[in-house]
Image (tube, rainbow, N blue to C red; front, top):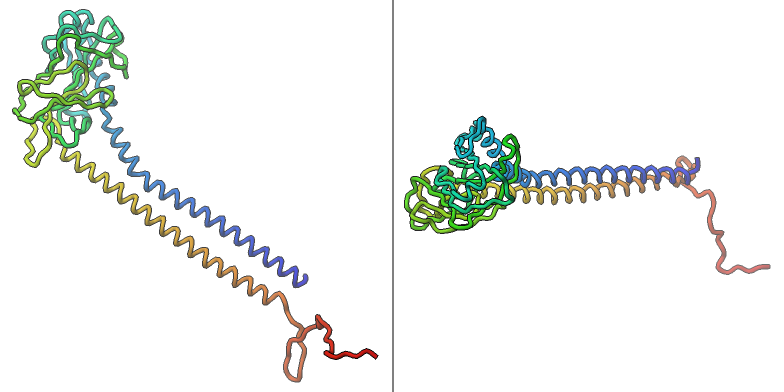
Length: 331
C-alpha cells in the first residue's frame, strides 16, 4: 500500500473515532440534561402530590360515599352518622334524607350546626335529596389552608346530593339556594373575638369573608364549607377545636419554597459544570486529534536513506525542479 493510501486510511480512522466520540458525548449530554430535568421537576411533583393528597374536592367525594353507607334502613327526615376509616380519624360525617318539597315548605330547624330555612330550592329538581354534613375537626387547615388566618372553629360543610340511588359513588352535588331567609351556621364554644370573620369556601375553590353574627353565627345562601377565623397576629389566640393554625402551614410553604429554590440553584450549578466539562473534553479531543494528525503526517512521507561514509542521511529521490544557470547561453 502506498504512503498516500496510508495517510488516507489514517485520516479516515481519525474521522470515524471523532464521530463516535461526538455521538457518545451527545448521548452523555442528553442523559445529564434528563437528570437535571428530573431534579428540577421533583419539587413540583412533590408539591402536586401534596395538593392531591389533601384535595378538598376529593375529600367531598370520599365523605359522600361514607355518608351514604350509613343508610342501612333509611327513613326520611332521620339523620344518620357515617363511619370514616382510621386514616380520617377525627372527621365527622352524617347524612339526612329529605323530600325536596318538604324542605322547601318546612325547612330543617336544626341539623347539627345548620339551620335550613323555608324556601330553599335545589337545581336540578329531584324528588328526594340527601344533605351530607362534614366536620373536619383537626383536618380543617390541611384541606382548607388559609394563609394569614387562624381557625377559631373547625370547618363545617353541608352538601346536597340526589337520593335516588343511595349506593352511588362520586355523585355530583346539587345546587341549593336559600331564596327567602339565609342558611345559618351556629358554631358552639367560640371565644368572642373583635376581629373574627366568617369564611366561606365555595365548591369551585373561591373564598369569601363575612361578618360574624352574635359572636358565633355565620349566614349563607349557598352550600359549601364554613368556619370562623381571625387574622393572624403576633398574639395569636389558641383555636378552641380543629385546625392546627395557619402558622404551621406557612412554615411548610416556606420549606417548599426553599426546596424549590435550592433545586433550581443546584440544577443551574450542575448545568454550568456540565458546560465546562464539555468544553474541556472538546479541547482535549482537539489537541489529541491535532497530535495524531501531526504524527501521521510525519510517518506518511519517509525519505530515502543513503550511506555517506559511516553514517546514513536522507536524500531526495529526485529533484522536482531542474536547476537553471542564471546566464545560460545556447550554442
